[in-house]
Image (cartoon, rainbow, N blue to C red; front, side, top):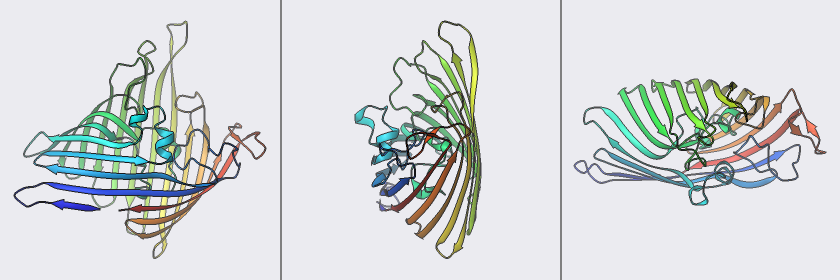
Length: 342
């Protein structure tokens, strides 16, 4: 990361940084299309070396004004931003902010922002596991809109957002209703984080008007030689039936637990257990599955890591494919990645 600070009198700072994550994944069901299950968006390709995410990022700050621009490439952008216009698919983030108070940490930021939901991001080196959890893959990684944030002290963050929708830069066709979000986060700078985030918005065209309400909770504890995070997400959405004025409220649930520990020196072991329940196909094609993963990380330093992970999905109904292309209740894959910040 390169940084330029002009002087103490002129408080201008410019930082340029980057991130690259190259991976190889092998799905034991050997999908003929070369694409892993449809509810995954990171590390998507089977039996090939590829770039999951490459980001170049510039940050500017001066006298109560800040701005960030990040451009990206990789299979994450290819699959997760497929619904966006082509001109927007390579924007990782692009936002500007103004400080609203000289004496307090009160800011308004607007543009394409990182999601306020969840403990995982697309920057793999910032996550405990090589791959992302099912709940992270099926909730927003990014959002477009405006956010007002306030820090009454160094440990507490309070934020409110007005958004274009559920992980949308450009609105869905026929949708002109704003969506809303909130975040309440406690971080003691000693490894303990408690977070509650919400989303409220209309899905689809306004003529349909199916409202979605989402809650994300997580608690994280991080130490010098171990770390743990527990998360639970609960969502509800209206289901309006064609030709009827009656609505039904349907929901989905996700739970995840991750634990990692240093084994020796730079070597770490990482385990994850997760459960995703979406039998009414609200945010997936109807996936209900239990997931287990086990990984090994070689953390060379804070900016570089080599990672290896095995991952298993099991479902009560056949929701995957086996080697012969028949429906199966299980899916197994192995992935490895090199992650570097610069």
